Structures are given as C-alpha cells and as structure tokens.
Image (tube, rainbow, N blue to C red; front, side, top):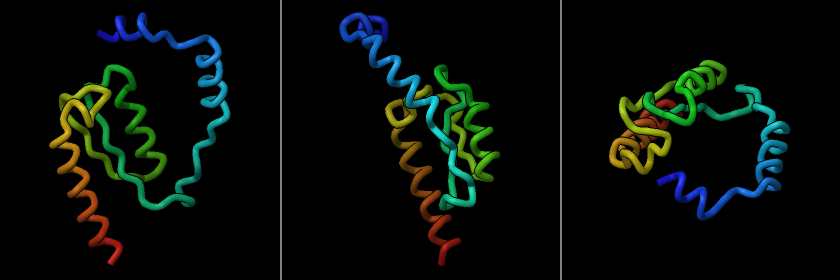
Length: 98
C-alpha cells in the first residue's frame, strides 16, 4: 500500500533535501526549559525504534506510556488506547499541578 502511495505521489528531491536540512538545524530544547513531558510510543513501531522514545524520555526525565502492539501511526492503530492514555496523563498532571 505504501509503495503504491509513493509511486502515485513521489517525494521530490527538493523536498527531501529541505527535510534533511530542517532536521539538521533542529536543536533539542533543554529539559529545564519545557513543561513536564510524557512520552507515548509503540513498542512495535517499524519506522522509529522504541529505543529513541526511551532515550528522549530519559533526556527529559519523562514518564512513558508504551503501547504493546501498535505501529508507527499509533492514533490510527489504536485510537481508543491513546485517548484513554491521554485522559489518564491529563488527570495525573492536573493532580500534580494543583
């Protein structure tokens, strides 16, 4: 399915270069400059290794919510789980911030 989409709507070389340049200029903000962070990821992500999510969580000293089977598009793969997880995270943060 993805190959068909790529063939029908190829990414131009110019856009590929723009994306690489944008990524190369990205600077990760310091954890102290951000509000509390919570990392939600899938353990079965085939595009981005779950270890990347865990490293980000470690950097930001963040809590994590791993999904056991969804792929890279977690909102599409299991929207109910994600909405429940966001609800729980929101409830925990409102308790902490009060």
